[in-house]
Length: 343
Image (cartoon, rainbow, N blue to C red):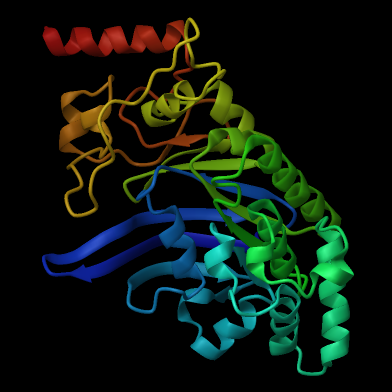
């Protein structure tokens, strides 16, 4: 049974020109101990979707369902949501320096997280737990660093503090929003290794939000690729990397240095730029940037349908539902599409 099951999530914001749809229909599920990676460029809707589920967008127009252990998070009152946030579902935000209070010592912030949800825990006990958590996430001298302020930690250590805070109440689900952004490669690897080790140790379900497919390759069990507020491909990690179907997924892979999609040692960036949520193209939102685009792509939005012979692999594309791959087969499809349009 899924720990979290989201169905047809839509998130909109009122603007001067009307309702802006940031998320236009997202469905996914996460099982205990598993990792779901939601991948997409900035503005794809990945962060907005999880913030909506956690009740962090009070001004948004939200519809759909988000069942967490059978309870619909989108219908719960603020008091109940506050009890769930931190205790049962935690979030690791992208920038720890803006998420941690600059005027409070990190130990106090972790201890207050614990005491807010458990009034029976005294200050001394909460402090001991904070020291224990800082040691758990690999911060040296935790009994001393517990009294330091956030600015006294380098960025990688601040991210470890955020992870410690997220784990303070032994949550069942952790949402990590770009947890390794702006970290150098060595520190990034350390943080990812830490997250996966703690996940295995405590059996936590993880939803990882990222634009970096290199990060996904290290930790994900299942991958959802989003574009312009919609999921365009869903598959397990191996299928995503070796048998992608959607041209956007293929483009993301070809823009990674050293990936299977790079030909003759050169990167192949995706042309153009993501659309504004104020003016999403009709049909498939990716068609203005797609090398496989056909007339139907501009006229009708493709459903997220199962790719032939690949289990839970699904793609929202009008191309035949057979995995495109990244080599000769993809080129053959491109030539067939081009030939159909020129006749």
